[in-house]
Image 1: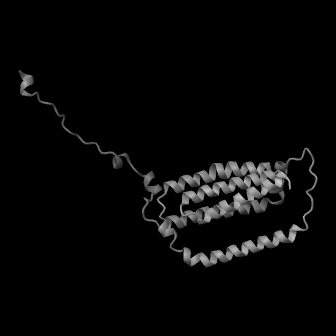
Image 2: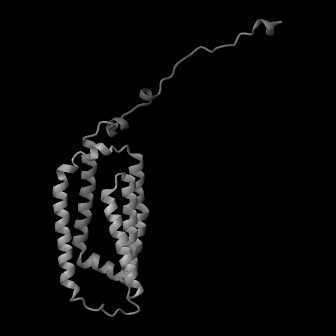
Image 3: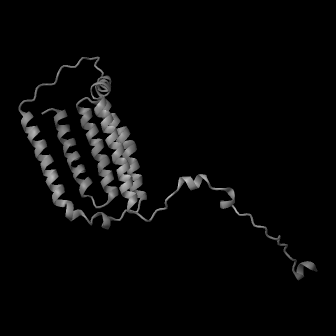
Length: 205
């Protein structure tokens, strides 16, 4: 067993434990921190298969930007854990069923291809995997990339709409009223007489 194989199993174990803690952590901050560990461990596994560009993008974009933003948002929001757990028992059987189906599908694919694995293809010394990835994304799979971006945009807008629709503890802003505001509506000038301090009896003497 080579060092790469041992390192792969160690990283895979860390990845599984961290991913399990993401969905079982009682604190949202703890879940986000374990999700950061999950992304970082997945990046190291990509580094093992010589996908350096994808590994660095995962660390810089997700771990360095997106997940840090999630962490700040979760820490600043007043999240009520009691309201989050209200529908857990109702959707638990459905979630377990979907999870079991996903595990069975992955196990079927792995066991089906485990014995038929072919050795990796020979790669030239001057091969640029970043260029090959860019050519594949923007030529052969350009339509799929656009569809994926559109799905992410719709998901982001839907999450914002669903979150803001049922909350009453925030102040709504009306841009049209903000544009039409005048200085007289915000600033009021008051004329007050000046006050002169009168000297005391001791000071007069």
